[in-house]
Length: 364
Image 1 (cartoon, rainbow, N blue to C red):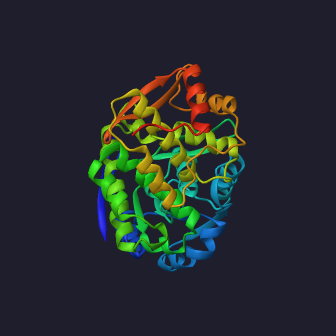
Image 2 (image 1 turned 120 degrees about the vertical axis):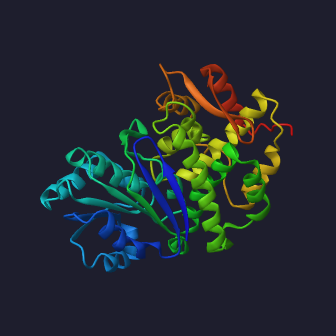
């Protein structure tokens, strides 16, 4: 097992990463939350079939109820959020109750927002089941989606702990592995040249990454995020760098319809676009060709889907949380590990998106 300490202004907690770490849950609850009255497990339809029974065994001596939501981004709607709160009220949860988020990033976002808003806030524990959730489960951003934008309704609300069972990775479909690895790449590019070089050299087939390797990759990604969050819990400054690739990525997700492209797949397209912009804006010594060839070997699509319209993508980006008065801001790189936030004018962005969709190459 590996542990990463998360320290923010509002709370300190641990992320525990390893095989079968859920077995630590009973003693954690007994020691740290002995007055817990009832536990609400929020999970989704896919995870319920795969992992709920093993968690229920660990909670055999506790009073708990379970609420199952749709899988993926369909969980992050007003209706599902409202239904979770209704269920909690009907089950008589009180301020001494606790929420467990058992699932991927969508379940963690939803359950965290339920916990943050129920009776003005009750404790919750993140139990991620996907690679992608190594990013979303850490740092206290919890939210649901709105038709006008992703994660637009939410709060900053830190969990009590994150228990990351790496054995769950074995049950993930390839599409979810690709989605999660997109965030691993992001962490490397914004923070750690050596980590990026290692990924480029060692990760050549996402179908054959050993569990121990995943544990190391996830730990490093969480360490990078922890360092940033500890300095800027509520995204007043450098935490925005974690949105590298997300300005365009979120727009693609929204325009495709949530769930029709995974978060990580959309973010990877956004990363490629941001890297090409970075090369044009700065003296950035980076081989886009090498990066794109690597992504192709890992079976990523690196182009904006042809059916999407530039004007609609730009309108989505104007609604991005980093936008101010409709001005669109991008996280770019001056070098690997040196992110910057810059404003991109609409005319320039329209031109660059058209070039990108037309397959313009960047000289390396």
